[in-house]
Length: 529
Image 1: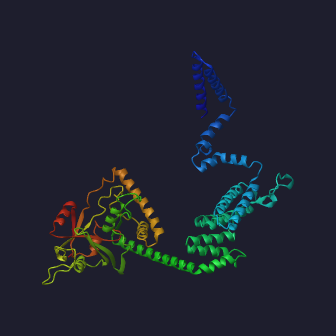
Image 2: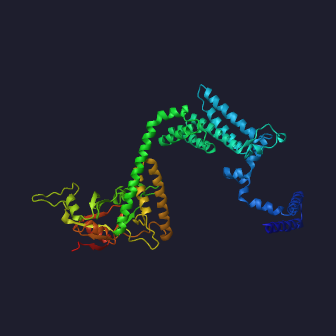
Image 3: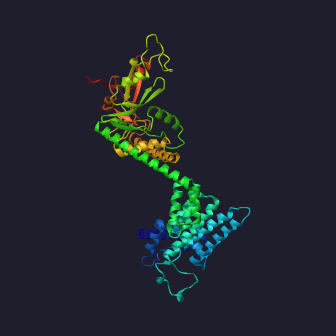
């Protein structure tokens, strides 16, 4: 850095020499020449180490000039705010200023209480004064113990000395007062945040616990209300606090109901965890592969095609929230989907035992015609083609197009590789269905959108565009006489969303022939003799 500075001084000297050598110099040129000469002399007049220190400070991000500050943090680092404050409050100490602003906050709050017109501006002013008081409290010099206080004869002001604990109590009181002002404005979020800060500085501030309970009451967080009340009553000497006891009596039933609901959710979650572990273990032992699709179709609310894709994906690979269930030591029952692409229809089978033949369920849905009958049972089957004996059954080979890096196009099924990933996927699918309430649904949607964004980004980096996607999935034909167990254990089968999905076509239908032209049939599963 010093070398660059020296080079700059030399360049300025050379340019000045050229300037002075020019003819027809006027008064302006002379003045400019003298200014450059002065700048060069000042630049060469550094004391030892002074120039290096100056250049280092100029280039240090933590010493950004106020002119170039873009955030409040940058402005604070520049020191300009403190400099102006010292000018405005020249001669005042942080302690006296803290006490002044705290008093102003109290006065504004009392004015608001007295005001018949209910002018909320008083409370807003009180909040600002309390925050200003806290800012000055941060600057108070404090000590470990009273023994460390300077002698009285050395005091330059009448301000009291404080220990660290006493300053923390002051900060707690200030934040608790700010929470009370916000309480009058019904700013429940600010009441909660300021009460928590007050408790952080002094956990025995019973008023802060009370205001925290009121904040959670306003936010309808009943469990947190109960926790705050109990914490306040647990403070020594406050077990019979009148305000907390009254709040507890008024809200006790709601707190109990909320806690019972949480315990119920926790039990249900523990049961789901156990079920997912059981399913994962069964699949690992019997070579059944599980997969997943993105649970959202867009990464933002602004994507125009999101609703269309969402409908298409959820129709073809819905996340039902259902898990396979163990029905015996050697058998599981799976939720299954029969899809009829020609008519855009489908049937959901909630319990399909692994030992059952595909034909058994097909016969229940599409029974054969009895003597004298000419109409099938399905109202949408206008040509009466959907009979058990007249249907071809397929499943799609979902993961055939995964590349060597394991990058899967967002529209294809991605294998689930471990138990933890399987658990996260299942919980996210349930949350998006609304099983855990709107807040958890929003969280799950945000997480899934982030995952989809990364998946899209990885595919674009590898293949250039999302339009550069694999062709239609190949398919495997399934003989109706095989069992679900044989299908699940097939080397090309990946079960998306815990839901084995079958595509059914009338054998002689033109759409069946077109389907086989677009999606190559690579295998046939036949019954074992």
